[in-house]
Image (cartoon, rainbow, N blue to C red):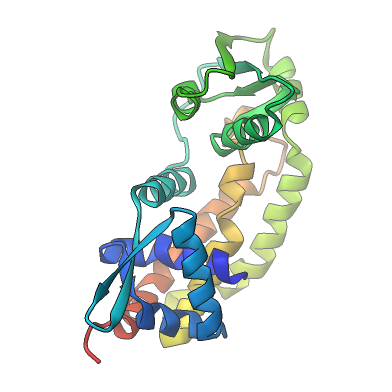
Length: 267
């Protein structure tokens, strides 16, 4: 795990529930569990502050780092994508976004594509992205202040289930995603009994749970959360989601207790 990603993981799954802030020495102690030296921690948080994800203040001789509004928004959106998977039946409607961005605005176009993927849209063609879920308003809200982006949104149905399955297979690489889910299951399913029995404590629980989060958290941003009728036969994604949630919950008490211990305000 890269130090920058690790800081985001620690804030996203632990520190945001402790006021969204941490003393530098507490963060150094947490990062030390992953063999990240203090000098590297200082460099990372300084960069994240300059990028607008963290803000800092002094209390006596200590520095405290806290999440900015932009970081809170990012974590709220990320948590929703990871934990609030769609369970309702699909109404058969595809929600489509057609965009036009000037050739001179390549950076902006890349940002738009990343945001579309973030919200679970897949590219049917370079300028046409679609999703079985109605998230077009979230995409529009992200770029409301960008007059050079032209967004057109539509809802439509295909000619039937066979066509829907073909659309899904073209918009997302479901075969590769399924293989990656299977690999994740191979790693974590055998460990579930140890998690359930509480055999991991202290730093071991923190490190294991953080690695679990790190390994899983990108899947919901690759996975469009398709309705069951559009998924390949033998799809591993739902089982991987269940195993993740179980493991995440079993490891929580010991990991949380250790984080509290390391970030205690007393010397």
